[in-house]
Every structure is written in C-alpha cells, then in structure tokens.
Length: 246
Image 1 (cartoon, rainbow, N blue to C red):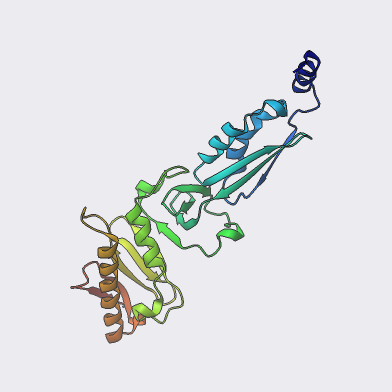
Image 2: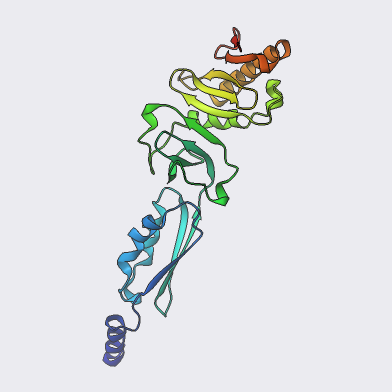
C-alpha cells in the first residue's frame, strides 16, 4: 500500500466525514432504549472505520431479552442495530412493578403498575405475585423454573375443566397458600399450593397433581353451585375443604 493511500485512509479515519452521527434500532419489543443507548451512544462521534461492531454485538447479546443482534455502520454516519428478542412467557405483577418474563423465567422488562403493556404483550398470562420477597425483582433476575411452569399451566386451564361457568380465571401466588385460582365473576378462590418443593418433583408429577386438584374442584362444583362457594382449599386433592358463601 502506497504512502499516499495510507495517508488518505488515515485522513478519512480521523476526519469529520465518516463520523457516526446517529443510531437506529429495529426489532425492539421490550428491551429498553436506555439499555441500548448505554451500549451504543459511546460510538457517537467516533470514526465509522474504527467502530468494533463485533464487540458491540457481544454486548447487545448479553442484554436479558436479546437472543441475537447485528450492528452495521453505514458510510453516511448511521449505525443500524437489529435485534431478535426471545419469546415472552408472562406478565408477573409484584407490589412494585409489572415484570415481563422470558421463557426461562428471566425478567427481561419492567413496567410500572399503572402502565399499559405494549400491544405485542397483550394476551400474555398475568400472574399476581403477592409475596413480599418478590418486591425487588428486576431485569436480569430469574424465577425458579418450577414456579413459572406451574403458573403457566394454571393460567392455561379452561374454566370448563374446573366445572366453572366463569369466563375467565385469575392466578395469584400467595405467601401462605401458594398458587390461588379465583373467579372474579363467580366470587370464589381456590388454593392449589406450591409446586416443586420436593427435589424429586418433575414436570410430570406437577401435571398429575394439578389434574387431580382440578378434578377435585370439578367434583365440588358438581355438588354445590359455584355461586355458593367462597373458598376452596385444594392443596391436598384427596381431602378438599371449602367454605360456603354466607
């Protein structure tokens, strides 16, 4: 390479013509702009020829919601970031915030309690976590896999399987009674307990226990109109207790 060419390249790298002036993002659903800017803003004003896109891709890939990322720096001063985010599993509401959970239970996004979730998140199961220990959960933290698995299984139950005429059920996680299903429409609540506490528990044993609990509640509602029932303790499906409305 001639000295003239080396000098020309050095001039381009150090001159004002190829400076990064803007960053654009595509593929963002719940990764916050603040987290992205913290990684990308340091390259603003830097020569496009000197930007280490491979390092930026690695940093972006470490964000909780990001499955993979790409970074391209154009000749006119714009860096383009494209993200592919992992699947969203549930909205987990604590006393402090609404948390967006990924499929593996990792918290990948936080919304205030009063914020309306973006349209892409409408329809996700919503779990109310009433435990004080969940108050400080934030991005990067992870719920135990068995908790999320049980929550999703209970949230997916059709009301008909419980022998209920209600159109929708709510799922909460209570510090005393574990998972609690409730029908705002019919006015009853049913405690299903905690899952995965025994080291030998598996997905199969959890599914079998839920099936037994559901069957027990259905048997109860076959004998008593659900409008007459206020509270059901189905933690032990072999011995279900209930309290009538009165």
